[in-house]
Length: 230
Image (cartoon, rainbow, N blue to C red; front, side, top):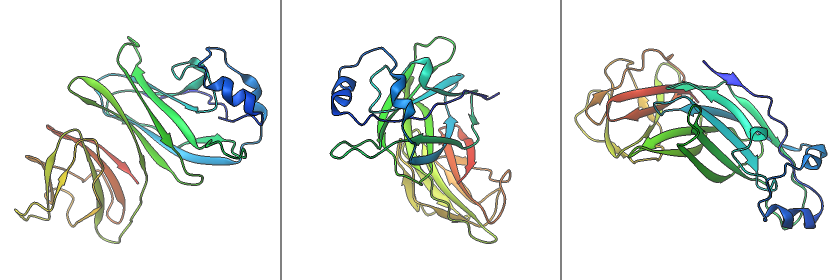
């Protein structure tokens, strides 16, 4: 079950000295940066592909307090769950300072021990997936730009895998591509929902989706974990 938090705007200051303080890593939360106009935004869909309930965090690079701070909590997700799109806003008008960079984090909700973080440069008006996944029992987090490619009467799918795996489509034995570990593939056109996509040794059932739509399909060595509309 998903639990949402009230995420405040992620903003910057207009004073360079404050930016320099941000580099220092103070634990204090500076609420003054929340008073500036929010003039940049993206919609983010958070995806949990690990075996635990996790909590996601996000903060703009100008904020100097720690990423894993209650002020930056975004959403809690159970195993194999995804959020509705959540709007994320920030302020950008300082010259010579890249304020589109944000830090994304994920940690095990119950133990707060397993965690991962990544820095990513968002683009105003572009939407993204934020995915927690696992490799060799370590948490990973990836941010992917959403790329809808809806096409009538077929499925359009991109594959995100936790290991290198072959991709076969539409009943052919030909390997059309390799799903690279921790990377997203290009989009493939799939004609049927039940028997037209094979990743690794697994047939991937797409029948929970709708023809004419495009999806991100998250796959592990055991088969499909999640199917999320682009």
